[in-house]
Length: 128
Image 1 (cartoon, rainbow, N blue to C red):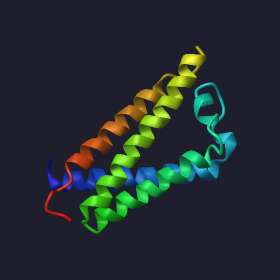
Image 2: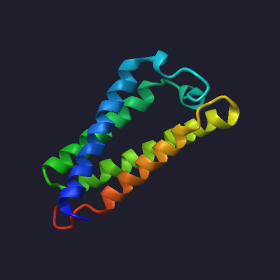
Image 3: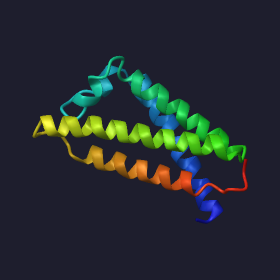
Image 4: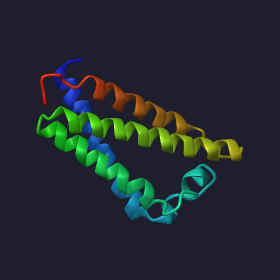
């Protein structure tokens, strides 16, 4: 993958993670209501339980990318991917338990997880 595309994708994904993490945490419990969110809202301490780790992972990936240090960039991106897969599972639980739940959530987060893994794998090897 082209270095420019890798850096841009990494920074975009990391920035998205920071902003969504802050939105999750700052939005409070009224942000995660409805049948689709039932699996996510059932986690103790939600939504901060979801938002704070995502924001931290985004900061780690962004700092690693901006400083051209591979390990934190890759660790942050893989962490974002794991977070996306976990929230995808939570959305899937909501969709399975309620026929009226929106089904786009699991697919969206699976796509973002795939992109984060792609950008992590494509990080330049010469950076330390």
